[in-house]
Image (tube, rainbow, N blue to C red; front, top):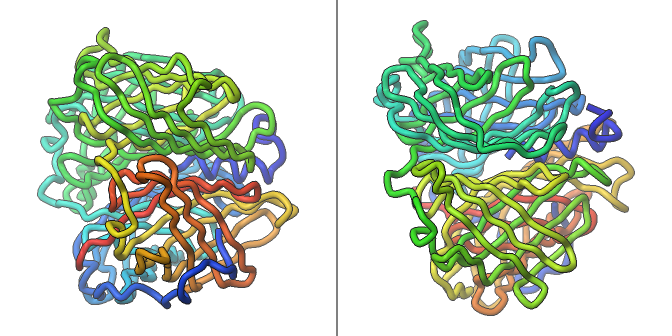
Length: 532
């Protein structure tokens, strides 16, 4: 890995940001932050089977991912579970692990602690419930820096027949091809037929060794649920296409989580059932959209990259109202529509009609050209991957609800998950960081934020976990709120710090954000909590 990504420290933190989506004692304005938002959650809020998807790095700086399923009884006990774990610091690197027991404790704010017992191994996690249907996780046992999601499963969908019609996917991780380790991301759609065959599909790949390629046809492949009992009990199965081998867990008939398990490298991500109404021509793809991308640069400083962008499609292949915020290894850039923007276009792929594939590009006179490929799940949702040279990054895409966005309409209880890196003057060695927690935006006039955060800091020389630390901050809405807005968060910890985010509202209940500081390259999201 060091041949591609520089020093071991830089390799560690760059790959951490490929996987999926910092703070301190500072004056934030408004009143003092509240200890935590009282939302009414209890242990009974976590009940049923949940699929997990997590990725990050182990303490040696190697890529790590896990998918699986656990069963919560609603009373603080984990009664069963199964995990697939990929750790590229070992050989063969992947293993299937039975979860035999565990415990959890959910606080009224939706913040909680979860342990999964597997033989002599205990996986420790902090979580934040968005609702009883799921939320966000970070690993807190200091064996790795990883984060991700947990989502309520529907066991009635644990069959091959549930996977019928095309699924759109976004996987990212590490490749060993053609000869050395490098980041990789691939997006596309594959076509399961409900009886164990993958009949086709299409994909685009961005390989840190060889650059972007595609669209590449997905050749006929196969999938099957485990016959050992893991399929019917946990929704586990395997699939093969285009030389890649995956394990997957069914969330429901419209969603699976998957992880690559083969000698080619390792990657993980989500796949969602594609709507029959996916756009097939430019006129069907209109409105305003927001996307979040995380990944790595594979040229120059070879550091982490996070990016959030908003634009409007006109139905004729043209883009307008472009606004972009990018943090490349601590170098923050803002780009907005004006005479500096040219060649701003999009194109639905008519050569592969029905694939949901499209391309999107624009050029800024100061910062260069931004090329992307996207695959749509529906007219309002999809995944998008950078195809510009030297950047490997990908992430979710969503239609933006109509503005304006005003503070008075944004008050409520929220959960957040950020992941990234602390670097620069604050630390001699860059530090991988993951954050999770709940907070309340309680005052439209002062935009006061108050809550709690659990976070992990990990580098090659040490690891730290901070639990239940006070979180404060402010939100400043710019103009009508449809472009970039400013969040300032502060954590009263030891060490304490402050981080500034530029953020875009997908809706009043969903926010994508990236850091604008030169000592943090961090990205993530905020979701409004649902009533338990």
